Length: 395
Image (cartoon, rainbow, N blue to C red; front, side, top):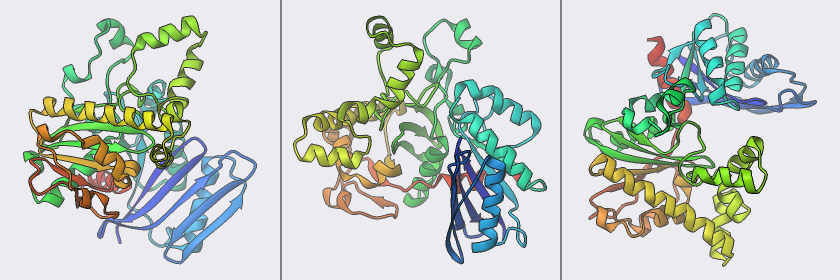
C-alpha cells in the first residue's frame, strides 16, 4: 500500500490524514491539540476505531511522538508500513514557490524568511515540518503552498497601485490563498461535468470562516479576492474583507487605534462578528430569518459582496461556464447560495430551488436545466490535493 501522510500544522495543534494513494481514501486521521499547554489532547481515527488521550505535549516533536503512539494503538502501524512521503500545508510561499517543493534546509530558510507575510501561519507550518522530519527522517517531505496556484496571475492582476519601488522592497502584491482548495475544486468540477479543464471558464467560491473567490480560465487562476494577506476580499466570519484604506487612517487619528488595535479590529472583530455579533453563518441565517435586524444587515452585506465578485470575475473571464460553491458555508447553506445568485439571470445564471435545497456530501448540480451557466456544489478536499501534489513532487 502506497500511503502519504498529510500534515496541517498550527501554532498549538496539528491535523493529519493518512491517505492510500491507490484508492485516494483516507485510512486514518487525527488531531493533536493544546500543544505547549499544561494538558494536551490527541484524537485518532484508524481501522481499529477511535482513540483519545490526554497527556502533556510540550512541543510539536512530542506531538508527533503522541501521533505515532496513536497509530500504533489504533492502526495502521507506520512502523510496519511507513508512508512514502509526508505532505505539509504551508500558507505563504510568496513569489518564490509556484509548485509543490521537496523540503531542503534552503526551502526551510525561505519559509522562515516569508514569515513576515504570514506571521500566524508560516512559523507554525515550519514547526510542523521540523518535528515531522525528526519523526520521519528517511522519508521525503514536500511543502505544498496555499499561494502557489495563484502564481499564474498576470502582473495587472497582482499589482497594487502604490509606489512601485516601495512595494518591491517590501514584497507588497496580491498573492491569494485557498489555492489548494481552488485547484482541487476546479479540477473536480471538470471531472464531474466530463469536460476538459482547459475548455472551462470557472468561478470557485470557497466559503468557510475564511472565504475567497477565484476566477479560473482553463485551469489557471487569473484573479482571486484575497490579496497580500487573507484579509482582503469577501466578508468572512471575523475578517472585514475589502475596506477603504482611509478608514484605517481615520480610526487611527480619531479613535486612537494603533497598528495592533487595527489588526485586532480587522481580523477578529469584523465580518459577521462585527456586524451581527455572530461568526457562524448558521447562527446568522437563523437570526436573520427570525427578524434580527443586525443579522439581516450582515447577511445582506455578505451576499452583496459575493455578487460583486461574481460580476467582476464574469467580466475578467470574458464569459462563464461554471460557478462552484465549496467549503463549510458554500457546501451547506442553501440560503447563501440562493442569495448570492439571485438576480443574476442577465448573466445566464438560473438556480433550481429544489436542487439547491438538497443536503448531500456528494458533488451535485444545483442550476436549472435552462441555465447557461452550470452551478455546482463540490465538497473540497485539501488533504487529498496536498497528497496528490506530494506524490507528483516525489515522482
